[in-house]
Image (cartoon, rainbow, N blue to C red; front, side, top):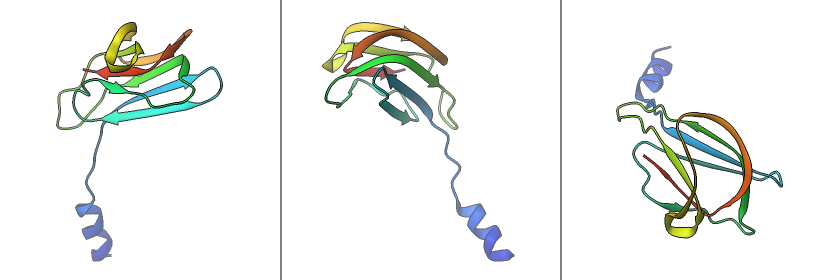
Length: 101
């Protein structure tokens, strides 16, 4: 019994924001982190034609990010969609990069 209590005590409890994107062809991309993401390219071929986005901003021990952005081009060029925490069905659009802040 004592060994299991020690293992539980040593297991870190980590909570991170999570951004999930669904494409019209059934593919799904999952991104997560604890702080602002900066710009990140999405490396899918062919490019994701996103029709749903779900953002869960809750984090432990860090300020929660409030916004996610999706971009048409790599390197966060051509803002296509911006929103806050929630689950959103959107008009399908090609997405090549994102930011969370």
